[in-house]
Length: 113
Image 1 (cartoon, helix red, strand yellow):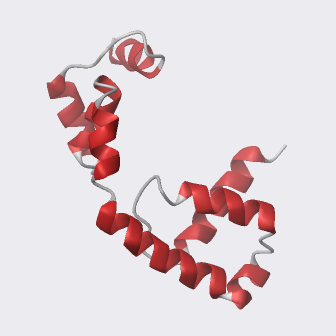
Image 2: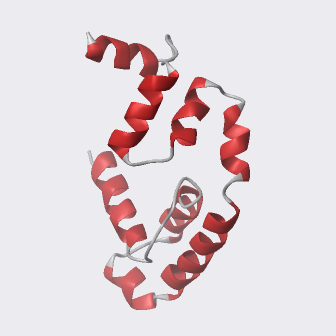
């Protein structure tokens, strides 16, 4: 039964209760507001306005990542992938420049044919 509910929620055919969203947020160790933004689309504006300090930290880490020529060479990161990573960084908190290599590896693995 739970799998059916999750499937309906994931496909936008059902809205989860606030209690379920809190539970999911706790399990995923994320702030509940990120889950509520999916329940109430208008809440996405609240989530985006709360990015201030995270964005500046991500920008610093992004600069460190893009200036680490050895790391970029080691992972053979072309400009196309740098552009994609620059967009991905706004989704959440990045704690270390090497986190971008992990994200890039996951994207490459997911898209591998």
